[in-house]
Image (cartoon, rainbow, N blue to C red; front, top):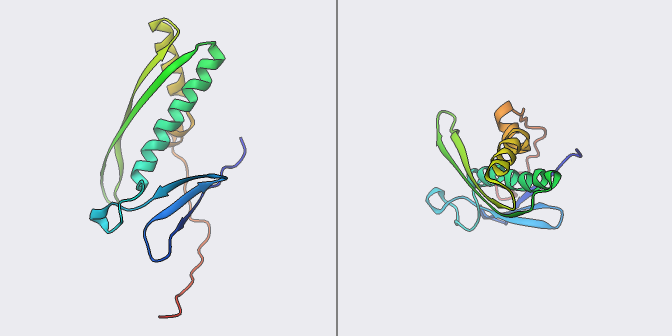
Length: 142
């Protein structure tokens, strides 16, 4: 697979940011209780959306390989937050699939997708995360 790169840029003097990948964007912000404007998804929500979005996309991919027409997918992802440093814990997801297949075929599709979905596997198997570069730009007013 090719490398994927996204970029996040905050608006001037604001915690509100725009995340982009090519022409697609999403708003990112802190919750109001943490000093943000509450106008976008926070990082934890984006992590859970990544798990659910990946699983949903991969389910359609794997269904197509099996010739199973999928009519609808619903994924619900939850996590607790705690520890020192704070991190996602007890991350779990539930899946509901409506497809033109038997119950057994749908169950096998869901179990297979659970084994091959990239984002859940990245978390389950541990992906190294490193800070690659820092650029510090002091403001003129300091």
